[in-house]
Length: 483
Image (cartoon, rainbow, N blue to C red; front, side, top):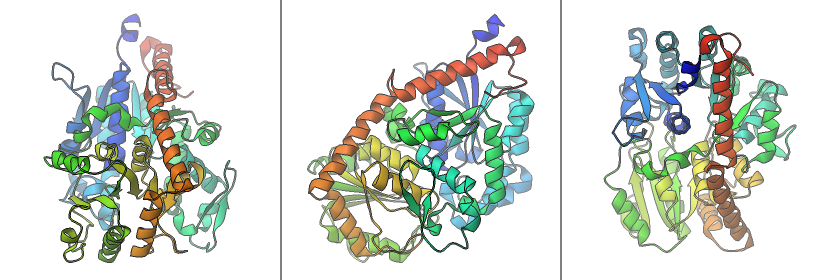
């Protein structure tokens, strides 16, 4: 038992095959490694080019995080698109088939875990079936949810108060009950996950039997909601973010191969005044129509502000999305980047003064960590709730969508122009947003440093997992692994 206690905690990570889930889970894996754990990330072979460059190496060249590849079973190979093995590489129409293929990994993952016998499993919340596997092996399961505490509390209220049962029949705006702030949602702003009632119930049941929940957030950002979520029955939450801060020195490789154009992009920013550029990016799953792309392009042009616009390439991106002669007209004051870009590095540049974002949680945190006010333009999923956090709770955001229409409704060029001008302009309100954004950036960095709130949560979690292992006969984690 003493020998076992001297060994590092062996932790396996199994993220959803989507850049927005894999990247933060890899960062969390590195946090575990830096706290002394022996860490392994499990993913499919097609995701190796995405994952491996993001993994730190020690001075002798060995990886800090190990990588195990789990191939899709032959029986579902036809469901995996040739364009890639993650949600960012395929169209929305292909998502259902792909997720069926992902769920077919349950058996192979079970075999893998039985073979390696880790001390702990960190599973994406989208895989509730890993709860049974962990229980059978007698190891604690930690749940990773992509968003922060605010959204988790909103979703709990929707779930427990039955709002989701009326998603399709509701037509009026309604208040989310039981929250510290008065938050309203339109029915079209509720995450589509609530249409899959059985999946939601499975996730909740799996969470209730798990060791706890890992949240990529920091206490100081949403203290009321961090406390409220911890009051939920059987929920033990650890706020360990913003995890992107664990790897700033390798941001050019984070989530992709290093871009050969990074120097040119940074030089372009270097030539601009401090705070003068608005950064525009809609994440890895963005799908906009040709008309919407043109409205966005024309709105940015008409705003009169300098801009750097990152446009996703590949599945779901229209082939003819720019107006004729657009890049020639905006040359010098607008730069369009096609494909992947190192968002944290670009957002952190002094020339960037604001961020037009789809309000995905990773982008939301990265904007806050960089100290930038944001123009919130949610598109789908949980993004409408994150918009409320930015505009109504944290006070660092302005709404892009000015009309009463919500959901997938088209945002007109004049709305884009108005939002950018409000974001980047002067006045008391704009100055206050910038001040608050800078304060959140300072608090985020302090949270991740030794002694900070997120650092302490991570330390506490490691101690609890080690104590759990030591309580088991022979150091093995079997039997009751709950708290």
